[in-house]
Image (cartoon, rainbow, N blue to C red; front, side, top):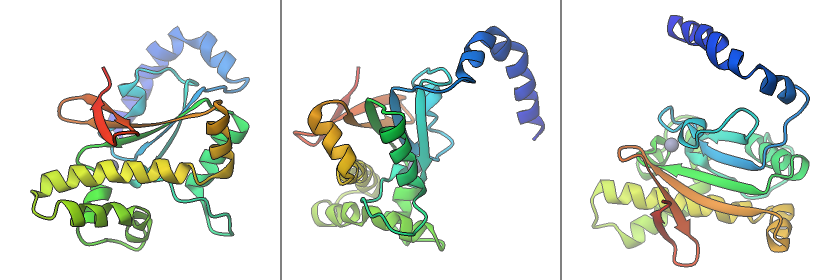
Length: 203
Ligand SMILES: [Zn+2]
């Protein structure tokens, strides 16, 4: 904890002091243009990767950057609630699903489902696991893992389009969806080309 308190001390002394005006304005309200849906993984920090300031990006983090299908009922839909707020209230113009290499959630999906909550949660991406088993069963675990991470990201994008107010906004051109993938080791960001289904370096 000491490390975090020291970090906070430093934040107050330097960043906060330099940006007092910005925080004053942000206290009046937020108007981010972009939502990022990323993994909880401590190695994937959207603010760091995109070099953004507070107020710029509305961020949702969950296990394996998953989006469940649209299914309004009385269950606790934390992810869908965040998406609803970003799209319908904040009216963001872009939603980026940010996948990443060596994802523990995807590893759990490919292996034995663990825990009381991770297994059922990762079931959202079960079709990705089945795709890997059907098309790459002879490949190494590393290749299968990456393929499953890519397919999981595509499922999240498809599920985003199952929300009627997202589909409607993408069709009218006021909202764009993006699939990006972060390779931790190389620091490389890749973009999904939804036509070819391939990932290419963003730069
Ligand atoms: Zn992850």
